[in-house]
Length: 625
Image 1 (cartoon, helix red, strand yellow):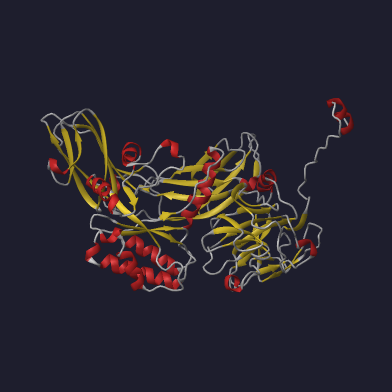
Image 2 (spheres, rainbow, N blue to C red):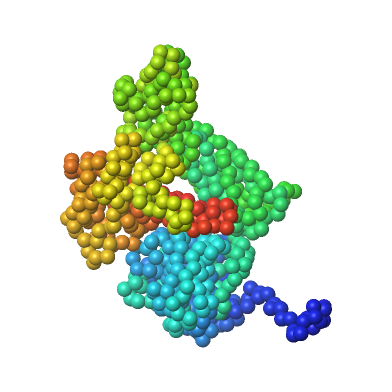
């Protein structure tokens, strides 16, 4: 049916215009697949003749094709300054990237011209940044190291948008309606200000780079994420669960493309060089897209080198793509006090004791494997109390006045502890559970919801809905909060104070200055309070500052005046330099914990939320290894 006859049928007085859908090549002005596999020349497959020259970077296998490996020292690609790359008001820059390390200096370009024109960069905070026409005009989102990510920056003259792995990760209204003119377009470095770009080169791999003279739609971004850079292999992310006798293998399915209904994965663990598997797992059905997980029960696997193999098959048993093979070193199981009696429930919680006491049992021993928090749960009738390490009612952590289950959390040193039971002659717990668990923090006391009609987060509200589920509160250390801190501490909780990172905006800082700033804070000065949570650290901060902060922390830890107080950093990745790693190790050695800072924007579905958490939290934590 013609548009004209369609309009007549509707009785329209004017023509009905239907915009045809854009195809993948519409507006494409540069496209590099890197499948040349050798040489120093890159061909632009868009037809716009923006061929590029490789400086130092090497081709590496990526599935059945190639990607480009950049060393982070001096490798880059020069795509020239052809007229089609000199964009005025609309642009999309798209690339597959696999960062190997968070930069330690400057701001390496991934693909683009300069901050003052358009480009994607990878900063020292472990985030990808998208710029249009100037440094302040940007948006950014975390991109973890060690795995492939699909990154797209778009600009439509009004809004900057940054997509990571097919999803909108950040957006920002633009300060400028047009794109400032730039110089050459580069991969692996940027042509921005010298103080940010000198010696700043991207370390990692890039593949499937495309540039458009229009903004890609969300639907196009999602389609490209699903259909480009297909390696025809699964990605494998093994995680040994030593105490549980399991090997958990994350299966990255994206490289196989869209999977047919009924597809399954077969995962096997073999001795290196041997065909016969020791342990196997079949995962079915696989989702049509995304990720899956295999759990191999390996028991007391001998320490050593193994080979992990994974293959996908359709419901008729025919292979889908290639078999993935990956070497794996199974480490020795750490020796912890009481380790044989522990039961690892998940990555965060370990059960130390679970008993249904008999009439003659009055004391129960358990071993806390590290300095840290334990959770105690008791189910009993009335007339009963339980205490820790001292058989006295005035030291009770739980008091049963009537039938039911009571819970408490206490911070205990590593080693053996005893729960004592007292009360009426026949009173006994029906069940007693002790678990090791992390520091669970409410941040922060005194804050209120943005939707004011629902009322304030006052102490009454917190007592009902929040405080039973946490063991630590972040507050200000003010005199107004002192009575609440006293109540919380009397319940066995911990109270720390938020403070800014000293010297963050200064050129340099000394250990004396950092020590003075931290010890003057109420979290350190007030004997009632337990220390500080400091905002915020990341890899790219100067080594001189990290050295000063490390020395200051050691001084505070070794000062008897501050015994028992901890310093806990809010942070992004801190594993990129030796100076930041030394500080991180010192935090742990001094009893502190890390607060990995990530914002959790609203997601459209549970699946989207899970994918966002995986990319911003799980992948980042894996990189700390």
